[in-house]
Image 1 (tube, rainbow, N blue to C red):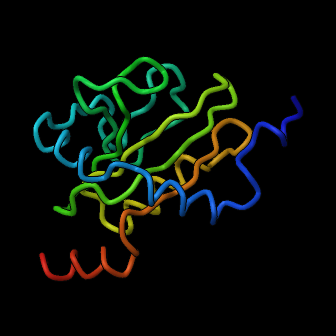
Image 2 (cartoon, one colour):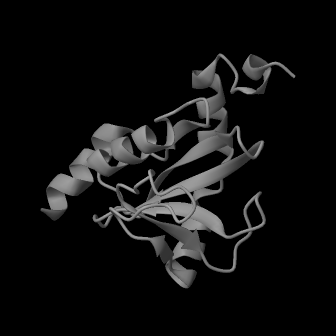
Length: 146
C-alpha cells in the first residue's frame, strides 16, 4: 500500500461530519463521569519511550475501556469544566493503527494544542479533530465559568 493510500480520506469534512453524527457522545460522557480518567503522562512530561516528545497537557485513559490498541481509550485532559468536547481520530504510521483520543474538559486553546501535538509530524502520526459542538459554543461555556 502506498503511503498516501494509508492516510485519511481527502474529504476530511465529510469524514468529520460522519464521525460527529455517529459517535456515541452521551454514552462516553457517562463512562467518563462514572469511571474518571487516569493521567499517565502529566503535562510537560516526556514520553517514556520517546523522551524528545513532551506532552503539552495531561494525557491518560478512561479506566475499564479498551481501545483499538488493546489498552484503555486514550484522552487529553484539560483544565476547564467542559466535559467531553471532542475527539481526535489518529492514524499511527509506525504501528499501523487508528485510535480515538478523547478531549475531556479542554478549553479551546487546549483543543488546538492537542490537535497540534498529534499532527506535529504527519509522517509518524496524523489526526482528524471532531468537535462535539461548534468551537464558538465551547468559548461561551468557558466565558460563563470564568
